[in-house]
Image (cartoon, rainbow, N blue to C red; front, top):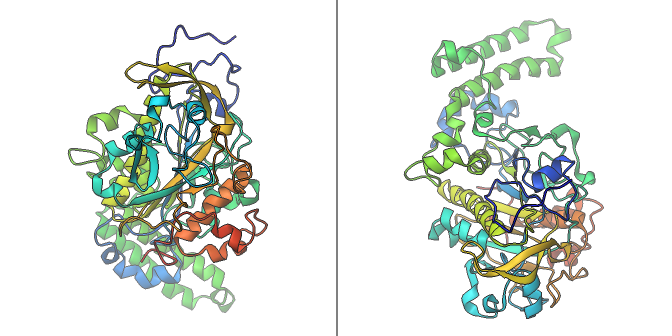
Length: 517
């Protein structure tokens, strides 16, 4: 049987959760949610510009052949997309992102409603000192997520961010929450230079939560990646680069391509007229030459070797990067996505089923998640790239009002039970050209809460349907490109209503025109 944890000692970030009101973990998801297995990361292919300062010079010799063969050297040009799957039912509303009534984030709930969301009477957002709008989206000023983001980002980065929170229920601690939007992001146009979909777990979604079945595409099922060595091992240029230096290896492959192309023209007409065979042979050498030219040195992909990520001027110090697996995982995903080798990814973090009868455990884990979120946003700023960051969890938690006065408990309400009624998701968008505009005065919030702190299930199509929550996220991703008018075509049979209804579900105005220029 389950062993009761003595007392109410706050747990370290990677210490498993022993919960008396839960059965012994039996599934992969339950082990991750309670921290018995490490969280994981997923990368989904797509996106844009190269890591190198002058990528086009490296492609010059092969540029026309690469174009003819349809080799994606800059992805599909869509905004990079990273989502955080906080497994177990993390607190999103109130104690982290403010969610109000129908008038928006600052249409305040009752004292009882905020109490349910873990905020005591002396920390209510009705007091302006407990509201922080530094990210455009309003957070509680003592949010663990916010404090973590602030630690990982510069003031300039934070000034170029905005977002929306979505009031939406999801079932507690179950594999039946189809939260993961990765296949939909791919259908919206994202594709990768090296990869299509990669996930840190051996699941159909590549992450902890399921993907909606109507978005599944077996042709792009994720490949597992969850550490820096997996990133550097993504490209295999064979032994040629080891035998020759990189420039000589590229020259050899170019010569083989040209000789082979000439021979194809002299083959028997029954073969030379077969364009499929010609393309397979010709483009095979072009692709190999391109790989040798651009990735002959796999360390160029290594997040640990990127001084913008690790080191004296990096987002992480060397000591913390080497000692914290969540930082290594986050760095691996953001390196691939934001540099343009992959464009969307899922980072699963485990142990967020933290209703342990105290507050400190949840605060510590929220801070860690915030540091990882902030790292992604800061790296996007350092790479001068836009980014959409989406955060979700399976279910949520609530407090009975008892206060944890410990240092890490911060004088807030103890988390005492699962509660799907207080759930929410949110997204943040970084725009290197300045803070994205909201569509309306209240569009930082989609749907709303009742006064008692529970989701109003009729407030939006997403509020009581996780499939439509994913559709709402996809609509907002397309809207950032000015492509919301194509939503009906890309996602036929969706549940978000007509164009006028969909417009009410869009939080931010476009930041690019179709693709990143």
